[in-house]
Length: 149
Image (tube, rainbow, N blue to C red; front, side):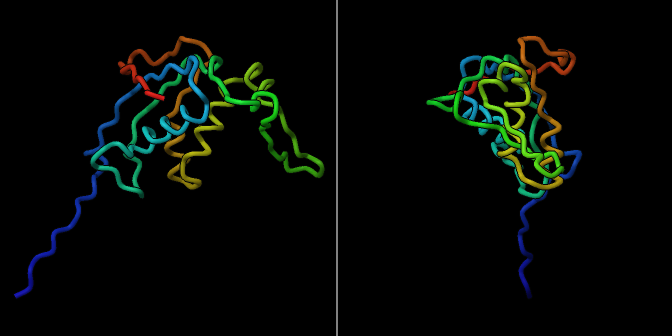
């Protein structure tokens, strides 16, 4: 008689409980902040984590304008993108980007640490970034999350 094989349980959509966290980016280093936030968005700290499912939590990042870069990255590092037109390669230094649109800098860093597929795009939608200390998500009762980075 054959034994019954124990299978690893895969969480159903109704089993996934999502929390809301608030992260204060004041004085935090951009890359280290982004990697920790990406882990939370993916749900890698949860016991039900599965690579092919989105089991992560929502993250609200406030004070994105006060994020730091180490070394000479502020003057030397560039965000580059291609418009789709001939000669359409555009770039902006991070010093200018953090002055003009700090939300885009933080979002770009976190997006780069998520999977590059449909699942990653779904996870990215759970990230909310704000340049200042205010956010409109008080109704979700977000918990403050202190990252030790």
